Image 1 (tube, rainbow, N blue to C red):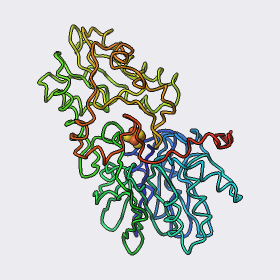
Image 2: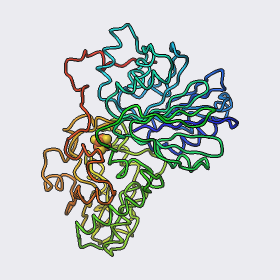
Image 3: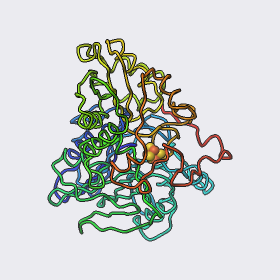
Image 4: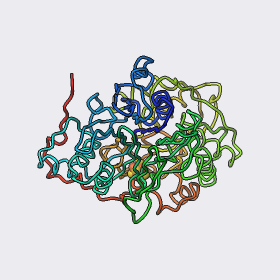
Amino acid sequence: MCGVFGMFSLSEEAAPATYLGLYALQHRGQESAGMVVSDGKKMRSHKGMGLVSQVFEEEALAGLPGQVSVGHVRYATQGAAHIANAQPLMAVTRHGPIALAQSGNLTNANLLRVELLQTGFTFQTTTDSEVILGLVAAHEGPSLQEALRQAAQRLTGAFALCAMTHDRLIGLRDPLGIQPLSIGRSGSAWFLASESCAFDAIGAELVRDVRPGEMVIIDREGLRSEQFAKGVREAFCVFEFIYFARPDSVISGKTVHEVRKEIGRRLAKQAAIDADVVIPAPDSAASAALGYAEASGIPYDVALAKNRYVGRTFIRPTESLRQLGVQIKLNPIAASLKGKRVILVDDSIVRGTTSRKTIKLLRGAGAREVHMAVASPPFSHPCHYGIDVPSQDELIASGRSLDEVRRLIGADSLHYLDAEALYEAIGVEGGGLCTACFGGGYPTPIEDADPSFPEFLEGEMVPR
Ligand code: SF4
């Protein structure tokens, strides 16, 4: 995950819009936030650990004059959560200064890191993004744009990049389009963002998605496009539709909320559970549960009150924090549950910790039966493209039967949505999506799985 945002304007200050854009993308990462702004001569940066509202106070924004920007909210996958790894990264290269913000994980970062180390390049962070900067810096070509293009051709995996020079904003999306990146516009100002909800936050219009393998260059001349690579297929992350993206975002021309409702309708037809009430696991399953209730005719109710000031539990980095998070995050509403047969709709079950605790909460509050309906197929394989699911052992559906999973989470029945029904609801054939977490079949080589890489590549340099 992670969220990226970029702005190019001839007249408007970039920092306030970048702040609001990042604020709208906060769900994509809560560990650090940062932005770099250029006034045409100087690039200034401000980064910090925590939420956008904690990192940027009025004073910090006032110290970032200029009309070109890139910004980032981080969710740590490659590289630990500390300030050295906060983005955007900045470097002065033979092609001039550059700032870079990335969403997604490369699957050949270690391979490239070793190659760069052998040429004498040193690293200040353990992020994939610094590898990209290294490739740009090493490139002998005529311009930064050409260096970025050549660097992008060496990358394998998922990446949506917002890069900037003093007077130019550049966006790149991986050749398979695994990560989302969209273009927005308001008057003469251009924007790039991981999701279109960031454009709504600043009153800009969604123009279109950046195409897989496309580089867009935005400067005084307007927007130009180059195709730096062509994938053999598209492989957009199916989990953007299921869980990651905000429901008000528009991806591939589809409103995420509408897609999720359709997913819920198909789940209802498939599961056909006899029950009294449909409730969503807050908040990401709300649209799917609504669709479920609509198609089944079973009333929808809210039976779990959420403390909105706690981050998503799935995103918390450690198991103990996740467990603690669930305890303080949800409170059941007994009046909606007492004596009822409940269908709990969730978008997915990853480790199963949250489902188990939620079902226990519902029973504790008086639910007579709890049936679990999951708006996706079993999550059985780790993601190498940006979600922090490091090993297969942690995935509850990996190597277990449906009934074993049901017993572990403590549900009366368990129903997953079939893959085909999911693809039909999204309106994209399975071949146009990355669905690797449902059964392997990764759309790129996973070169970083090479066990011969030196151990220090995994090491961290943690500032005190
Ligand atoms: S493996 Fe799953 S979560 Fe990762 S990019 Fe593919 S679909 Fe998305």
